[in-house]
Length: 297
Image (cartoon, rainbow, N blue to C red; front, side, top):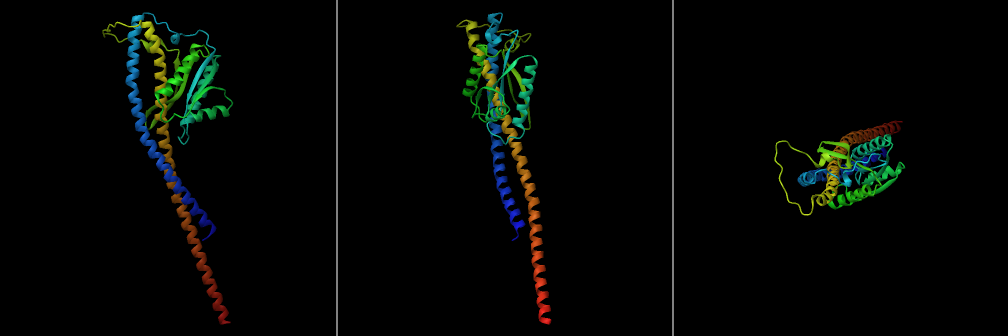
């Protein structure tokens, strides 16, 4: 067997082995998409009820006054929470959200505000540190299956930074999950909470009356931080669903490319094998002719 044929066959075996891995990863990602979608859907009723509870409390307090609602007239530092994955092999998922985060930091700097970077996910940490960005705090190891406990750790740390005036605003750059085929990198402001997020009046509908214990203002002190944590959790869930959707598409493309490459290399191997057979036949024929001439002489 010739050196070329051996090399081609080794490459075919290597590609076939890789194809099995990418196919398995595609199936795993596909199964996780459904679970991630279910987690996103399951979290929405809680967020809606929490918002409704804040509306009811806000109506009883009259004018809304709370540190998390405070619009600071001259913000100096803005927290930027970047949500990426812990693992790669997810196509352009991380590249898109990191590009969005850098655009967001650019817009923040244009206003004369210093961005303070917080990162969720190893890929974001590695990318930003490699480019010389200073990271205030990071969280890793949860991107594919984020839990509420992780969201609470992140949310409470950011609320504390806002309350201590280490940051005057908070933005998040993450990936919005629309469907298994459509995801979009986006950014939104999380702090301060806009009053219209808390009070949404629907005309023509009567408002229920409540007796509050403790006072409405004290309840609002508990609900508003919980609301921020819920927004962080929702963004983590959207990002997890988007990560798995992008990984499934990337692994599907890799599997298809491996199949195409296997077909091409199989043709090359067949051509190399045919060339070797032809060469051997020519050598045998040549040897026979030489023997015939030698015996004739």
